Image (cartoon, rainbow, N blue to C red; front, side, top):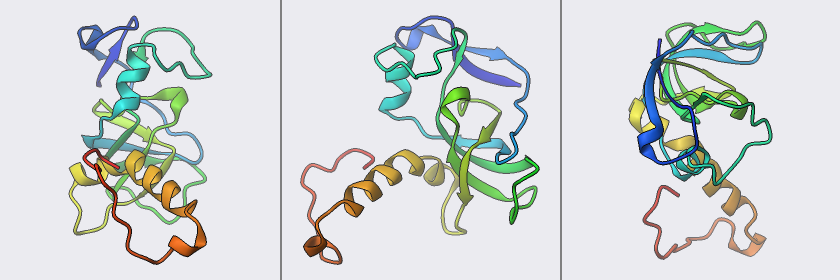
Length: 155
């Protein structure tokens, strides 16, 4: 399968489309055929070396921590999902690779029928960030209207 990866820290010029083995899902993971991938600041910060993950196992490194697609295989412990079901989610940080033909998702959910693959792929990082910000708001702010000035990014 094809996947975008890099062999040294740096800018976009370090990215290469390469042939690699298809990943195998772990017990609680699904393997999807990627239809869309999200890209955000975390991706380029990891690629240029500004953010180093605890398990920095060397090069080459794959890119992409969120994507959406159809399930083609499931780990032994996955229940309540089926092959060909559209899902979106996060890729484990120890094996990034959303910018690929196939990827394993560690945290995943069904794509609602009203949402496209592209919309779903853009949701994991920004959705979790927004949910975390709102869930830590003081109780007097909960269930009220909130105006967020300057909200031009994904969050």
